[in-house]
Length: 394
Image (cartoon, rainbow, N blue to C red; front, side, top):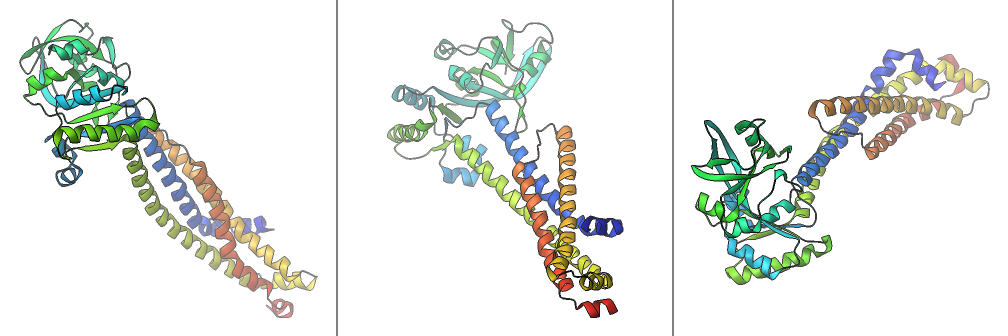
């Protein structure tokens, strides 16, 4: 009977459930997109080597980073190569200690040139961050670092521009006018927060100090063997640096802190947009209530006939309550289907895995039922309380 009542006025039913459709659609779509964006960021971090078993070391205190910004603070780093050596000697159990001196330069091979702002000076441990980073040739070795060799592992973009299809390993290129021998070519990688990793070129950290005329290390990642050892490693690194510097002019961050901040940011955005969706659901529930009140007024004669042939108050109450729930439930299902379709289309365009969140779908389904119940109780009670004689007169 409830479904027949909906079919009798299809346009009115569709307009009534529109608010529920929009509300459920917004809830599922925003939660799923937030989860998809978070997964995308996690994938990006993982592809660059970030994991829960890593500790980041920066050469500026947290207060200074807040005032100047991360990049500006790292440019005034207090960490040097000797600090890194002290950490490696004092903590031999670490899986890797990968420092990074960042710089830019112009590569030249014959008449061809390539400008990149992504030249990294590091050690052999940098390979622990990006597994199998060298697709051709080899990566930097400890001897390259010790003897300040002028060797370079060029990125795929640099290789394609300078050498095309010809092999690059063993060739000599000029970087900022200094001759380097190509010992390897990096594997093909995706972008990382807007940076094209295919432009990344790696040279020994000691060579980078000479090339860029700096002894300041912007960032260092220490990799522990087990996640449980991260707090202990953090304490030991802090102790070593405090003994060397005499003050805490540095900052140590766990990779998990970065992931937690991403979770918090995504959580706030999801809550804000979900609040907008809640307003839409509220509007939808008011619309359903108004239509059900109109329906009660229109069907007073029907109610009178049903009561005169023995229908109880509860029978009338549940009849109209089911109609209200049916409107809301159909609207919720339509909102779920619409959100799945939109997520599929957006995922194809932006090349991000967007799947409907099971939790969001369940919440949307449950909320659509609750909206129907809440908005249908009063009209159903009003219909059930009608006097049969007065209803027959109506």
